[in-house]
Amino acid sequence: MYHDPKLAAALPTDQELIDFVLREARMLDQQRYEEWLSLYAEDGYYWMPLEWGQTDPKLVCSLMYEDKLLLRVRVERLKGERTFSQKPRSRSHHVLQMPHVESRDDAARTYVTWTSMHYVETRYDEQTLYAAWATHHLTVEDGKLRIKLKRVDLVNCDAAFGNIQLFM
Image 1 (cartoon, helix red, strand yellow):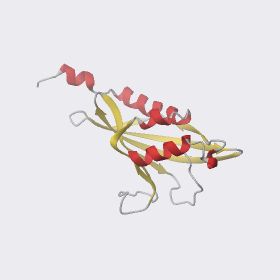
Image 2: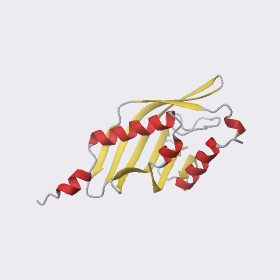
Image 3: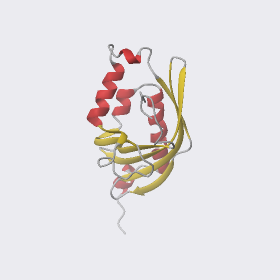
Image 4: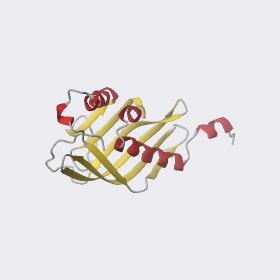
């Protein structure tokens, strides 16, 4: 079998995939939204299903299903001086279990990780706790890992929610 050392050097290790997921959560907690947005592929999506086991984000309503353009709009809103609903700004805290590499296809440069997490969003004296699983569908573009799809499944996805201001 032919082995191309340049290709092998460009492929992420399992540890690099895990580190990517951990670094992404840290960016969100530190409100480094522009940097976080740069982790997404141009055709990437952020998806939060509304139904347990939901398989289609377009034919079934979702809590969120946003492409990179909509994510950019939300990031700009969060940074805006006239976004009075964010004065003071909401803050978040991710508590992640160790991400697990679910699958890897080095030939296609596609990777899937699964992470169990608790997420807290806070503003003023109100804190809201969410339990969820995050599934990252990653790819390598120009030698860098990028998010093609981040799916956040809330344990109680079918509950009534207030406003979720930030990104899980």
